[in-house]
Image 1: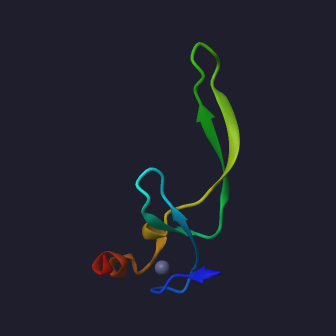
Image 2: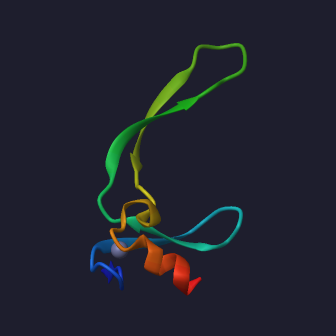
Length: 68
Ligand SMILES: [Zn+2]
């Protein structure tokens, strides 16, 4: 399990599409509903596991920005 080098929180590294950039996410996922719009039909909701960018939640986020 990866941890944030700034605050020690458990994080998950993913490769963002389509930029290909590595992005740290909070490890804990929450259930969210993703809405897909199908042309000419009612909106369709799908349950997904959503993660938050660790940049948004890290108490030491400024350190991340300094490094990049
Ligand atoms: Zn952190």
